[in-house]
Each structure stands twice: as C-alpha cells, then as structure tokens.
Length: 143
Length: 217
Image (cartoon, rainbow over all chains, first blue to last red; front, top):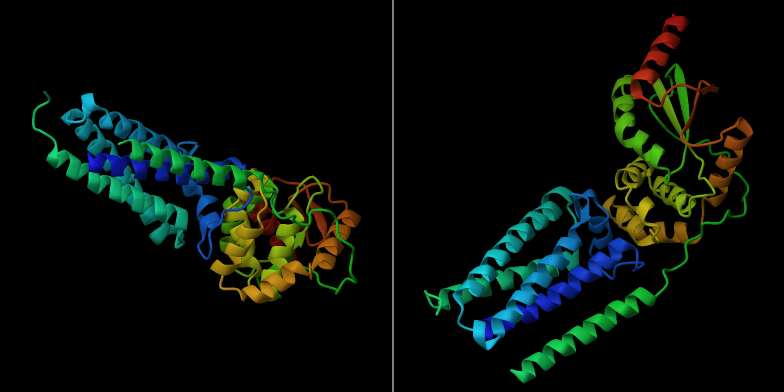
C-alpha cells in the first residue's frame, strides 16, 4: 500500500510539473523559471511537440492517468488486485520509455537541459521502480 | 490513510496556487515600438561570402516573419552551398522588422548584439531555426538569452547591449533604407541593387546568377 501511496504522491507532483510546462506552451505563463538551465530553448524546440500536440500535454495525460489509477488502487476493493499493479507497471513502463527518449533528445540532439524535464524524468523513473516493486509484491491471482 | 489524503490535498492546493500565481504575472515588457533613431553609424548590414563576388544579393528580412524563416531554413542552406561558398554571390542581410510583429525588432537587436561579438549569422540561424517563439506571442527575452548562451556569447556584454538597445539606430536606419528602396514586405531581395521579383527559391536564384554570370563573360 505504501508503494501505491508513493506512486500517487509522485504522480500528483508530476502532474503539476507537466501542467506547468503545458501552460507555458499555451502561452499562459510568460517565462519559465529555470535558473541556469535551458528550459525555454528545449520547450520551444521542434521536439517539444509530438504528432501536433505539446509533449507536456502527453505528460499531463500520463500523470493524470497514473494518479487516477493509483487512487483507485488505494481503495479497499482494489488494494490487493493484481490487475491494478499490472496496469500501473505497464503505464509507468511506457512513461519511463518516453522519458528516456526525451532525455536522450535533450542530451544528444539539443545539447540543452530543461530542469523541469529532468524533474519529470526523475519522478517518472521513481514511479516506474515503485510500480515494478508493487507488481512483484502483488498476489499472483486476483481474488 | 486520512493523513495521506490530507497530504495529497495540501500538495494539490499549493501546486495549483503556484501555477495560478505564475499565470497572473505579466511578462516583462520587451521593446516592440519603434525606437528613436540614433545617428546611423554607416553600417550596411552583415554579409556572407567573398568581397570580390561579382553579384551581391541584399535581403530585407524580418526575424518574426514565417516566410523569412522558411526561406532561411529551406532555401538559404542551398544558396550558401551553391552560390555563396563558391564565391559567386555575396549575401547582405538587412533588417526590415514589420510593425505588425511584436518581437521582430527585439529579435533584430538580439542578432545585432550577437554580431557585436562576431556571432551575427549564428544568432540569425538560431532565431530562424527555432522559430516557434514567433508563433507563441510570448516574451522571447529569456529564449534569446538562451540562444546567446548557447552560442557562447559573453552574457554580460549581451545583456548590456540589449538593455541599452545599442543597435536600435542601426535597425531603424535599415528600415528607412528599405522603405526608401520600396520594400513592402519580407523577404524582399535586390540583386546588384535591382529589385528581384522572382520566386524566393534557391533554384531561381541560381538560374538568375547563372544568367548574370554569362552576361559578365
């Protein structure tokens, strides 16, 4: 249960980070608070859009789904349901793979680092590890 | 479990509040209105190519203009390779920021300030290659500074140049020169001083240069 709680909390923080970047893409926020990073350079590059939609929007959708799934998994009726663990692990694995792709673009194509993207990458990595641990601990059969 | 949900609500409220606060802050103003014309320093624009090239093409361009960005990223690389690098053409860039564009004059200043440190064309390429800034209507100051940083500019000098609008006079002089020559839109081209009415395509420029070169021979 503690793992799912951690997943929910991380998904909420990730959702806030992704929403921040999405609002920036929408033009609601003037400048990204980035310190010494290259957030705006990354966020205005052509890699910040995928299939006509901002990458940040995929993050919002992904984290929102993880949050909803995690919250559902905390309910007593699903607490020991392996299907929730499988779904969480599958979604987190997809998110983690997407994170690796985006981080590789930053490091090897753009040669620039967006701190908010790194924060999201760290969150998604933690969620992925927690989801795998949750999957290992889940009972083999659904009651 | 109740404590956990309270924690979630707390994080959501604080995070949502921060986002809301951020959305209420107005971006720092960027000079977009015409600035007073300082005494022109006789600057005639940055050039690419050999000084001894027989043909000079002058481009009047606006960094915020999508057609200019398309030309700079699609046609210009071919022109650079086929006509400029081969010594056949010298290319001169002149600023012509259109008044309908909020940040084009600011972008022109950024390019001039990069040019002060020997990186005009590099900044030119950054501004046109990463042209999303021109579609977002957001204050691009931070982004341009990131470009400057990426190009290895001395940021203290860059900031001082931008804050003082050091080359506003140059940009305005370029606009006035363009207006005097009859420039109506961007990009506009002049080949050896004569207005070019053809398509803005590398093939057309090459055909024109070929024909002019034959005449010279």
